[in-house]
Length: 70
Image (cartoon, rainbow, N blue to C red; front, side):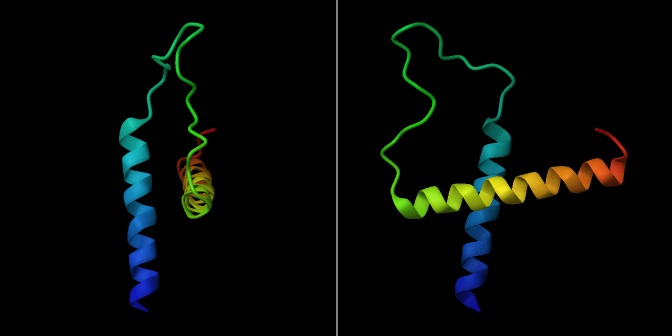
């Protein structure tokens, strides 16, 4: 049970970090600007990000349903 709770805590921390770093505009511009995605992630981190994106999508959909906005 401890493993599940620690995994859940990691997901919550990642969601919180992404929520604070999201911005409306991308500051990276120009021909030689580094791309937004880094291909050096390992398989576990990639899987974690997929799970985080799914959970964020579910939470956003739930908020839209509860608030009646779209």
